[in-house]
Length: 157
Image 1 (cartoon, rainbow, N blue to C red):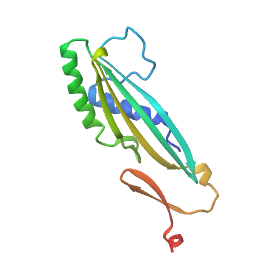
Image 2 (cartoon, rainbow, N blue to C red):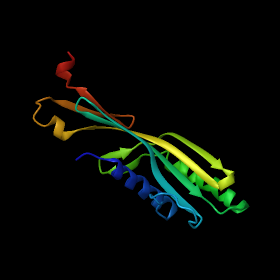
Image 3 (tube, one colour):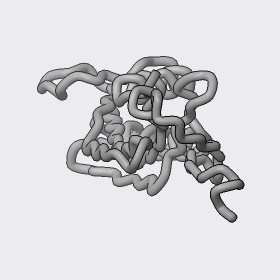
Image 4 (tube, one colour):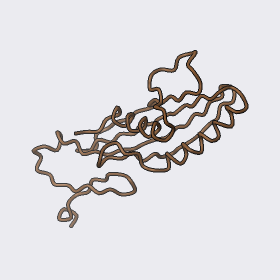
């Protein structure tokens, strides 16, 4: 089974809910929503096939809107630090599949009393349908959180 964007969105949403006690909204941002509120969306998705391996790059954005007062600004600073700690660790998607947040950035937008956090997650997966019946043997290694496909040692000689 291949892991897709929906699976990854659920994993990030679950991690946010465990950390902050409320699930983020994953639908479009509308005017008039109650504050504080957190929104999650995929800002960019790139997928390609490299042989039998699917390579996905997801860019996620988390937007936190606080109350529009001095306390709201202080709450954003605390939220940012907790979110930074959360995104410094892998996020489980399934038992054997994890997201490794990379290129994490933060911006506080004072005019909106909002914190915008972005990060990328890059994943490699062997497509079982494409590999089925090919007779090719590969071993999959995990290096620095990345799944890397290498030829069998016999083929390297």
